[in-house]
Length: 274
Image 1: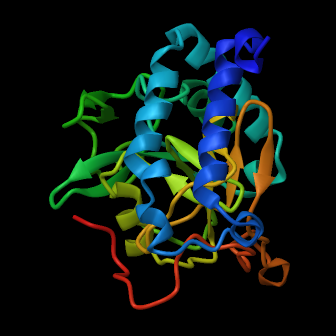
Image 2: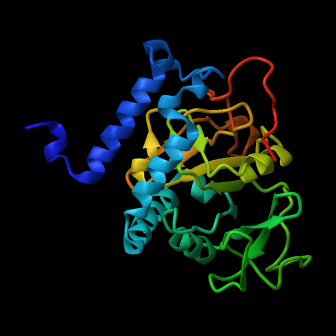
Protein backbone atom coordinates (compact mmCIF):
# COMPACT_ATOMS: atom_id res chain seq x y z
CA UNK A 1 0.00 0.00 0.00
CA UNK A 2 1.38 3.42 -0.95
CA UNK A 3 1.98 5.95 1.79
CA UNK A 4 -0.57 8.32 0.26
CA UNK A 5 -3.28 5.64 0.57
CA UNK A 6 -3.33 5.69 4.36
CA UNK A 7 -2.24 9.18 5.29
CA UNK A 8 -5.11 11.43 6.45
CA UNK A 9 -5.79 14.22 3.97
CA UNK A 10 -4.24 17.05 5.95
CA UNK A 11 -1.13 15.04 6.74
CA UNK A 12 -0.82 14.11 3.07
CA UNK A 13 -1.20 17.79 2.15
CA UNK A 14 1.72 18.61 4.45
CA UNK A 15 3.78 15.82 2.88
CA UNK A 16 3.01 17.26 -0.58
CA UNK A 17 4.13 20.74 0.47
CA UNK A 18 7.27 19.39 2.12
CA UNK A 19 8.20 17.46 -1.01
CA UNK A 20 7.71 20.57 -3.15
CA UNK A 21 9.88 22.54 -0.73
CA UNK A 22 12.61 19.94 -0.94
CA UNK A 23 12.49 19.98 -4.74
CA UNK A 24 12.77 23.77 -4.79
CA UNK A 25 15.54 23.93 -2.19
CA UNK A 26 17.68 21.63 -4.32
CA UNK A 27 21.04 21.31 -2.61
CA UNK A 28 22.04 20.71 1.01
CA UNK A 29 23.66 24.12 1.41
CA UNK A 30 20.43 25.96 0.67
CA UNK A 31 18.50 23.59 2.94
CA UNK A 32 20.70 24.43 5.93
CA UNK A 33 21.53 28.09 5.26
CA UNK A 34 18.20 29.24 3.81
CA UNK A 35 20.17 31.67 1.66
CA UNK A 36 17.76 32.57 -1.11
CA UNK A 37 18.84 33.86 -4.51
CA UNK A 38 16.80 35.73 -7.06
CA UNK A 39 17.28 32.84 -9.50
CA UNK A 40 15.97 30.32 -6.98
CA UNK A 41 12.82 32.34 -6.43
CA UNK A 42 11.89 31.98 -10.10
CA UNK A 43 11.80 28.17 -9.90
CA UNK A 44 8.40 27.03 -11.12
CA UNK A 45 8.34 24.10 -8.69
CA UNK A 46 7.58 26.38 -5.77
CA UNK A 47 6.63 29.85 -6.94
CA UNK A 48 4.86 32.15 -4.51
CA UNK A 49 1.62 31.84 -6.44
CA UNK A 50 1.82 28.04 -6.38
CA UNK A 51 2.27 28.09 -2.63
CA UNK A 52 -0.53 30.61 -2.16
CA UNK A 53 -2.91 28.44 -4.15
CA UNK A 54 -1.92 25.33 -2.19
CA UNK A 55 -2.37 26.96 1.21
CA UNK A 56 -5.65 28.63 0.26
CA UNK A 57 -7.01 25.29 -0.89
CA UNK A 58 -6.13 23.72 2.44
CA UNK A 59 -7.59 26.57 4.48
CA UNK A 60 -10.81 26.62 2.43
CA UNK A 61 -11.33 22.97 3.36
CA UNK A 62 -11.49 23.88 7.07
CA UNK A 63 -14.81 24.65 8.73
CA UNK A 64 -15.13 28.11 10.34
CA UNK A 65 -15.42 26.40 13.71
CA UNK A 66 -12.00 24.82 13.23
CA UNK A 67 -10.43 28.17 12.33
CA UNK A 68 -11.90 29.56 15.55
CA UNK A 69 -10.65 26.59 17.56
CA UNK A 70 -7.14 26.85 16.12
CA UNK A 71 -7.15 30.60 16.71
CA UNK A 72 -8.14 30.08 20.34
CA UNK A 73 -5.41 27.52 20.93
CA UNK A 74 -2.83 29.74 19.26
CA UNK A 75 -3.95 32.69 21.40
CA UNK A 76 -3.45 30.61 24.55
CA UNK A 77 0.05 29.64 23.43
CA UNK A 78 1.07 33.20 22.55
CA UNK A 79 -0.33 34.69 25.75
CA UNK A 80 1.82 32.24 27.75
CA UNK A 81 5.07 33.62 26.27
CA UNK A 82 7.35 36.12 27.99
CA UNK A 83 7.08 38.54 25.07
CA UNK A 84 3.30 38.76 25.57
CA UNK A 85 3.78 39.99 29.13
CA UNK A 86 6.65 42.31 28.18
CA UNK A 87 4.89 44.26 25.43
CA UNK A 88 2.10 46.62 26.55
CA UNK A 89 1.08 47.62 23.00
CA UNK A 90 -0.35 45.20 20.44
CA UNK A 91 -0.98 45.79 16.75
CA UNK A 92 -3.34 43.00 15.75
CA UNK A 93 -4.78 42.00 12.39
CA UNK A 94 -8.47 41.20 12.05
CA UNK A 95 -8.77 37.71 10.64
CA UNK A 96 -10.62 36.78 7.47
CA UNK A 97 -11.95 33.45 6.21
CA UNK A 98 -8.41 32.70 4.98
CA UNK A 99 -6.90 32.88 8.48
CA UNK A 100 -7.21 31.38 11.92
CA UNK A 101 -9.40 33.50 14.16
CA UNK A 102 -7.71 36.40 15.95
CA UNK A 103 -10.87 37.18 17.95
CA UNK A 104 -9.79 35.18 21.03
CA UNK A 105 -6.44 36.98 21.11
CA UNK A 106 -8.13 40.37 20.77
CA UNK A 107 -10.33 39.52 23.75
CA UNK A 108 -7.35 38.34 25.80
CA UNK A 109 -5.35 41.48 24.97
CA UNK A 110 -8.14 43.87 25.95
CA UNK A 111 -8.96 41.90 29.10
CA UNK A 112 -5.28 41.96 30.05
CA UNK A 113 -5.04 45.74 29.78
CA UNK A 114 -3.02 46.01 26.58
CA UNK A 115 -3.35 49.02 24.32
CA UNK A 116 -4.61 47.45 21.10
CA UNK A 117 -4.59 48.83 17.56
CA UNK A 118 -6.15 47.32 14.42
CA UNK A 119 -5.44 48.21 10.78
CA UNK A 120 -7.26 50.33 8.22
CA UNK A 121 -6.30 50.59 4.57
CA UNK A 122 -5.57 54.21 3.73
CA UNK A 123 -4.64 56.28 0.69
CA UNK A 124 -1.77 54.91 -1.36
CA UNK A 125 -2.45 51.34 -0.20
CA UNK A 126 -0.88 52.10 3.16
CA UNK A 127 -1.87 50.66 6.52
CA UNK A 128 -2.80 52.86 9.44
CA UNK A 129 -3.50 51.33 12.85
CA UNK A 130 -6.22 52.70 15.13
CA UNK A 131 -6.93 51.99 18.77
CA UNK A 132 -9.63 49.48 19.58
CA UNK A 133 -11.41 49.71 22.92
CA UNK A 134 -13.80 46.80 22.60
CA UNK A 135 -14.30 43.59 20.64
CA UNK A 136 -17.61 45.16 19.58
CA UNK A 137 -15.87 47.99 17.75
CA UNK A 138 -17.27 50.14 16.32
CA UNK A 139 -16.18 48.45 13.07
CA UNK A 140 -16.69 49.17 9.42
CA UNK A 141 -16.27 47.04 6.30
CA UNK A 142 -12.99 47.84 4.53
CA UNK A 143 -12.06 47.69 0.83
CA UNK A 144 -11.52 43.90 0.86
CA UNK A 145 -14.46 43.09 3.07
CA UNK A 146 -12.24 43.03 6.16
CA UNK A 147 -13.41 44.61 9.40
CA UNK A 148 -11.64 47.87 10.21
CA UNK A 149 -11.88 50.35 13.10
CA UNK A 150 -14.94 52.43 12.37
CA UNK A 151 -16.55 55.74 13.19
CA UNK A 152 -14.25 56.75 16.06
CA UNK A 153 -11.03 56.33 14.02
CA UNK A 154 -8.99 59.54 13.99
CA UNK A 155 -9.49 60.70 17.57
CA UNK A 156 -6.54 62.21 19.38
CA UNK A 157 -6.72 59.73 22.27
CA UNK A 158 -8.64 56.70 23.45
CA UNK A 159 -10.55 54.44 21.05
CA UNK A 160 -9.91 55.60 17.50
CA UNK A 161 -6.47 57.08 18.27
CA UNK A 162 -4.00 56.53 15.42
CA UNK A 163 -0.92 54.50 16.30
CA UNK A 164 2.38 56.38 16.38
CA UNK A 165 5.51 54.50 17.55
CA UNK A 166 6.55 55.74 20.97
CA UNK A 167 8.72 54.69 23.89
CA UNK A 168 6.68 51.60 24.77
CA UNK A 169 7.74 48.36 23.05
CA UNK A 170 5.10 47.15 20.64
CA UNK A 171 4.15 43.72 19.42
CA UNK A 172 2.93 43.30 15.83
CA UNK A 173 0.79 40.31 14.91
CA UNK A 174 1.27 39.53 11.23
CA UNK A 175 -1.01 37.48 8.99
CA UNK A 176 0.44 35.16 6.40
CA UNK A 177 -0.41 32.21 4.22
CA UNK A 178 2.88 30.54 5.17
CA UNK A 179 6.00 31.04 7.27
CA UNK A 180 9.26 29.17 7.65
CA UNK A 181 11.72 28.76 10.50
CA UNK A 182 13.99 31.45 9.11
CA UNK A 183 11.16 33.95 9.68
CA UNK A 184 10.27 34.35 6.02
CA UNK A 185 6.64 35.18 5.43
CA UNK A 186 4.38 34.53 2.45
CA UNK A 187 1.58 37.10 2.48
CA UNK A 188 -1.37 37.54 0.17
CA UNK A 189 0.67 39.56 -2.32
CA UNK A 190 -0.41 43.14 -1.62
CA UNK A 191 2.73 44.23 0.25
CA UNK A 192 0.71 46.13 2.88
CA UNK A 193 2.62 44.87 5.92
CA UNK A 194 6.01 45.00 4.19
CA UNK A 195 5.42 48.70 3.48
CA UNK A 196 4.20 49.34 7.01
CA UNK A 197 7.28 47.71 8.56
CA UNK A 198 9.54 49.75 6.29
CA UNK A 199 7.74 52.98 7.15
CA UNK A 200 8.04 52.39 10.89
CA UNK A 201 11.73 51.49 10.70
CA UNK A 202 13.11 48.31 9.22
CA UNK A 203 15.07 47.42 12.36
CA UNK A 204 13.04 49.25 14.98
CA UNK A 205 14.44 47.91 18.29
CA UNK A 206 11.18 48.30 20.21
CA UNK A 207 9.11 46.35 17.70
CA UNK A 208 8.70 42.58 17.73
CA UNK A 209 6.82 40.88 14.87
CA UNK A 210 5.02 37.58 15.36
CA UNK A 211 3.52 35.47 12.60
CA UNK A 212 0.18 34.01 13.71
CA UNK A 213 -0.99 30.94 11.81
CA UNK A 214 -2.00 27.28 11.92
CA UNK A 215 0.70 24.69 12.40
CA UNK A 216 0.37 23.31 8.85
CA UNK A 217 1.23 26.78 7.49
CA UNK A 218 4.81 26.53 8.77
CA UNK A 219 6.88 25.06 5.92
CA UNK A 220 10.52 23.99 5.67
CA UNK A 221 11.23 26.93 3.39
CA UNK A 222 9.43 29.55 1.32
CA UNK A 223 10.75 31.89 -1.40
CA UNK A 224 11.56 35.45 -0.39
CA UNK A 225 12.03 38.62 -2.43
CA UNK A 226 14.27 41.56 -1.41
CA UNK A 227 11.28 43.64 -0.30
CA UNK A 228 9.78 40.89 1.91
CA UNK A 229 10.12 41.70 5.59
CA UNK A 230 10.63 38.66 7.86
CA UNK A 231 9.09 38.13 11.29
CA UNK A 232 10.89 37.77 14.61
CA UNK A 233 8.86 34.78 15.80
CA UNK A 234 6.02 32.49 14.73
CA UNK A 235 3.19 31.19 16.90
CA UNK A 236 0.86 28.31 16.00
CA UNK A 237 -1.50 26.15 18.02
CA UNK A 238 1.33 23.62 18.45
CA UNK A 239 4.50 25.66 18.68
CA UNK A 240 6.16 29.01 19.34
CA UNK A 241 9.63 29.69 17.99
CA UNK A 242 11.79 32.81 17.86
CA UNK A 243 14.01 33.75 14.95
CA UNK A 244 15.69 36.85 16.41
CA UNK A 245 17.18 37.48 19.83
CA UNK A 246 16.36 40.49 22.02
CA UNK A 247 18.92 43.05 23.09
CA UNK A 248 18.73 42.66 26.89
CA UNK A 249 21.14 45.53 27.51
CA UNK A 250 18.58 47.96 26.08
CA UNK A 251 16.20 47.16 28.91
CA UNK A 252 13.29 46.22 26.66
CA UNK A 253 12.63 43.32 24.34
CA UNK A 254 13.54 44.10 20.78
CA UNK A 255 15.02 42.81 17.59
CA UNK A 256 18.49 41.32 17.74
CA UNK A 257 20.72 39.71 15.14
CA UNK A 258 18.85 37.58 12.62
CA UNK A 259 20.56 34.20 12.20
CA UNK A 260 19.04 33.62 8.76
CA UNK A 261 17.79 36.05 6.15
CA UNK A 262 15.42 35.61 3.26
CA UNK A 263 16.86 38.66 1.55
CA UNK A 264 19.15 37.75 -1.35
CA UNK A 265 22.44 39.58 -1.76
CA UNK A 266 23.03 41.98 -4.63
CA UNK A 267 21.54 45.11 -6.03
CA UNK A 268 17.91 44.02 -6.07
CA UNK A 269 15.18 46.58 -5.34
CA UNK A 270 14.77 47.30 -1.66
CA UNK A 271 11.13 48.37 -1.54
CA UNK A 272 7.95 46.31 -1.83
CA UNK A 273 5.88 46.73 -4.98
CA UNK A 274 2.98 49.15 -4.87
